[in-house]
Amino acid sequence: MSRAARLGAFIVATLAILVVGVFIIGSKQYLFSSTYQLKAQFDNVVGLDAGGDVRVGGVHSGTVRTIVLPHKPGEKVTVIMDVGKSTHEIIKQDSVATIETEGLLGNQFLAISFGSAASGEVRDGDIIASQPPLEMSALFQKTSAILDSSQQAIQNTTRATANLDSISAKIDRGQGTAGALVNDKQLYSNLEQTTGAMRDTMAQAQAGVNDFQENMEAMKHNFFLRGYFKNRGYEDASELAKNEIERLPQSTPIKEFTYSSKQLFDKQDSAKLKNQKSLTASGEFLANNQFAFAVVVVSAGMEGDTQKDLVLTQARAMVVREYLVENFGFDDSQLRTLGMGKQTDAKSDTGWGTVQIFIYPTGTEIPPNKQMESGVSPHPTSTQSVQASTTVTPKSQ
Image 1 (cartoon, rainbow, N blue to C red):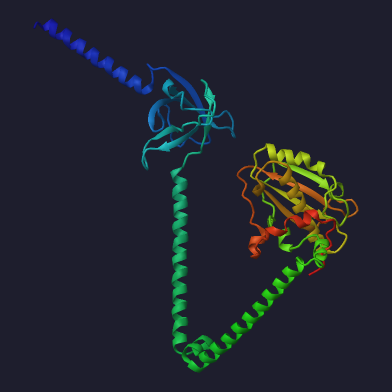
Image 2 (cartoon, rainbow, N blue to C red):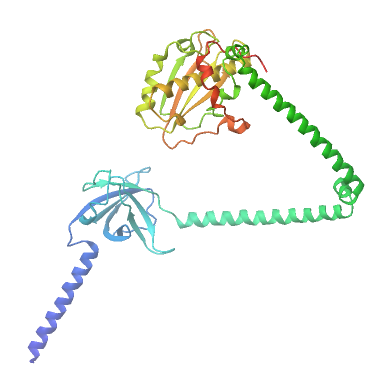
């Protein structure tokens, strides 16, 4: 082969290698592929640079075109990226962009999560949601704080162990009440006898209480005495708090309905509904909207007996709850009650009080049930008694 032929072959090979290299680099940068553009905004990009990887499901699917700084304080850094057309079916409007790190101290790249099937498709130039990146400096600071706390806890444990050793030594020597009890068998025997006598007394007292409760339950179902309990507005006080929570949550309700008790009940001391249609708007909202739970909150004015007003507000809350549950289709476990008793800020008409229905958004945690904390078990047999009664006039316990 002549020298000219060898030179030509060398030039052709070099050009071929150059072209292949350009296409390889171009495929990484998506220079020769069909792409569309997306944007994401961050408070801090923590070292992400233009030309960085964009990964969808862990697969390289695009590159960071440019990073635009904000024009004034308070605005966010905008990351503009070119993403391959093949991702258009899995990146949706609810996809989220995050800045992640390869390994512990590797390069940063932009990761985009899959969207949901029900969400709409993204368009060229759309801004998708983002999550703040994890900053290693902040992580190291938290780790240092945890180590300091752990060291302090170890020191406290060491001091507590030393104190326990000292106490154990005194007990072994017979010092103090515990030491005398451990070392004096006669004292221990006397204490055991006293404890046994106390257990017998408590057992007798518990038996008496059980007998009394059984007698009262029998009296409630007696034909001649049933009216007495029914006039109180309830057969079992624990029923009034069956669905009652101990407090309202801290979050803001999505909807609130407020009624005057005079508008809903027939008498000032009554738990009998007279104008149920006034509750239609709140019932329809509960039936037709998504929510975490709702609370019927009833307050009384400042007139009357404090204990009676507390029971009255509990009874009214239960009656309103039962009406809404029975007449509108929604999960009854989502509706709770709270009887407030006397309230100085209650918007009342001559002391009638108010009925409020607070509806809380999805994700709100339901406060603990007041009845479960007190250890009282619900008795579902008497749920209907308050709704059927005409007047709640309980005697003070």
